[in-house]
Length: 112
Length: 115
Image (tube, rainbow over all chains, first blue to last red):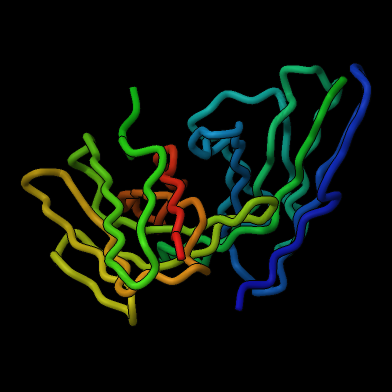
């Protein structure tokens, strides 16, 4: 059973605020990912990490940033939230060399 | 340009019958395919996968078929149960040296199992 956690689950915030979405996994996986999904649409990869101190941008351009200081923790930050950032953000992890990614429950973000 | 396509936004199947969900892809570099199941307000849950060197993989009620020449895969659920009602995502990836990077997803098919 995958153990990957995201907080908060839901967030409503005003334009211009700085937000950090938390993601933690207890499986010791080296690789972690952030996806963005709008309703009825596919998931798009926005960031990934091969391990500590490694971060890469994904296929979809995003104004968010990520950090990977600890293996188990991969937070995503928006310095100044805008209504266009309203979406669902899903965190995932996998073992190096493995194909299967395990997802957290997601954070639904609404920027007013 | 969408590289993974699920052309049926929804599918309704009677309980006990077979559910067949389809997925097409355009990138011939994809060499691993996965199906995920997603309930509302939850993250996707891994269901079953298949490598491009195989044409079939079975796990209990779930079977995935891969036709590389047609760039097509399908997920069969037999028999369908009410708990199978969810959105099913097809995803694909290719080997990039360090293992899979991100997955490329389709838009999903909403499967509804009717009693």
